Image (cartoon, rainbow, N blue to C red):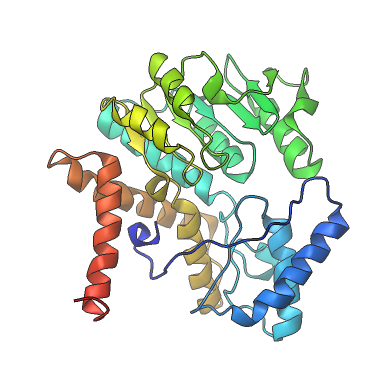
Length: 336
């Protein structure tokens, strides 16, 4: 993913087994502080720079950065990304993954389907940061957002989500920190318990899984195919399991954008946040948005180069990312 963005960063995954569900604000803060007490000595802008993901948003990053500052006696370093703009965060970092996903989806719909986003029926899973901002940008572009979900059920908007619905969901998730079931009867959507968008026998033009790993299984992929999905663009990391991927690959007319390409906007703007920290500057929202769009367009063109020789966009993403890493390793003398 980082190879595709063109930014000088590596990549890795880590986290903890702390489950924030059902925990109080104080318990979450104390865990974040304890976690950083052990982690801070390993962090440096040129060594390891954690960022948010599932269960870790601006609140948790703030608690951890506050502890880092106390222990390290340093301010303004890009040792965490996703920070508040009050202490070194970048404009559009919270929106970046969802916005970037929609920017590259818009591009592929235009290039491959010769259509705009206007009126497209889009299924979005999840209701966290990525899903919310993907839904927001989709609505701005005139698409119809048909679903949002959490681990307990799905909201189905048969006429498409409206601004009031969106505001209710943001209040529910970001302020009240509640489940979507609490919105039953409060939005224009219909709440369906114990389901996800991929179980529903409903036509969607574009599927945008933004919840979690392996959320689309073989049955879900077959349901999407049965109902005539045109494109599957991943907002989460590895949301389509291996069996489901094979189902989608068996229908080459369906556009498949893997997460390493389509959700790279988040890590891309993390890199831009680090650049701003190094410069001791904060760019405008318009500057960051323009750079995000440029990077998503560059990623698309890297994938498209392979399709000209008969490959798919998925193969293009894999090949472009691999070749960059392999070539760099060879030039560094790490492999022969």
